[in-house]
Image (cartoon, rainbow, N blue to C red; front, side, top):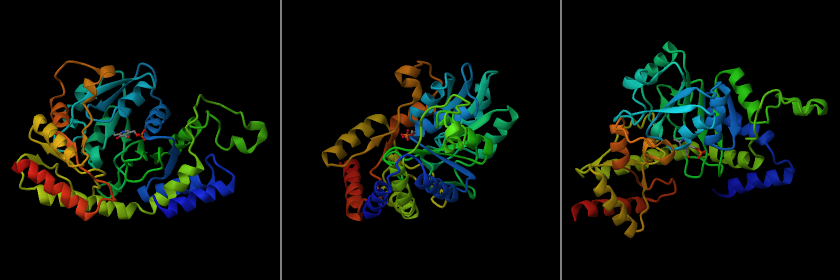
Length: 359
Ligand SMILES: Cc1ncc(COP(=O)(O)O)c(C=O)c1O
C-alpha cells in the first residue's frame, strides 16, 4: 500500500462515517463492473462470504455439500457453520479442482449444493459442472478466493455459479486487510445476502426510524467498513497492473526452472489465468522439504500447499479415497510471488533453486 490508500483512508476519517455506506457501495460497484457480475456484496471475509452464500442458498441442517479435498479449511468450515455436512471429493491432477468424473458418485438424496474451488485461478470444466448441477437440481457456489483477475472463456470467474465468493485477506492479489465479496447475477440471492449480513434487517429499513428493527429473517453482522472500502477502491485501481506482474513472475519461474527434472508446472493459460501465487509440483515430498529448508537458509520464504481436508483433525478419515489430493498436497509448493518482488530478487530465488538441484 502507498500514498493512495493513505489518502483514501484519511478521507473516511474526515467524513466521520465509518460503517458501510458510500465508499462500500463504490467499491461494490467497481468490483461488479470488473468481474462483470450483476451484483456484488462486500463482506468481512471470504469465509464469512462462503458461510453467508450457502445460507442464502438455503443450505441447512441435514444437507450435504460436495467440497474438494484440496482447499483451504474455510471451504468445508463454511458448510459446517450452516450445520450441513461437507462431503469431500478428490481432485483432477491437471486443474487441482474437484473431479467432475467422480462427482455424481458423491451425490445422495441429501446433497443440496456443490462448492467448487478455483485453485490458483484454474477451474474445472465449468460447462460439465453446471450440467451435473442442473441435472441433479443442485445449487452451485464458487469459492473464488484465488480467482480475482482470472477468466473462464470470456467471463470472469465467480460468475458460473449461483454465487461466487472472493477474498481480500492480506496475501491475495488485492487486500483490504481482511474482507471478501459475494457476487451473483440473481437479484433475490443478492438481496438475501445483503439482509443476512445486516442482522436480517430488510434492505433500506434503517432509513426509516420506525422500521430500523425490522428483522424479518435471522441474520448476523458481517458488514464491511468504510475503511476497508477505501483501501479496496485504491487496490482495485492497481489490479490490472498486478495481474500483469503475477503473470510475469509465473513466466519467469517457468522459463528459468524448465530444465529441472524434479520440478513440474501445472498447465496454466496465462491469457486467462492470473496465478496469485506461482506454484510448482516437486517429484517427491522429501525433496520438497529439503528444498524448503535450503531456501529458508537463503532467506527465501516458500509456502506449502494446503493439507488435504480429510487429514485435518475435524474432518479426519483414514480411508484412501483421495489419492490425487494427497499426492498433490505432499508435492506442491508456492514460491515467492509478491507483486513487489524485484527482478534481482526473482533471479536470486531462481538461482538458489537451481543451486539446490545441482548440488
Ligand atoms: C480457497 C480459499 N477459500 C477461502 C478462503 C478464506 O478467505 P478469508 O481468509 O478471506 O476468510 C481462502 C483464503 O484465505 C482460500 O484460499
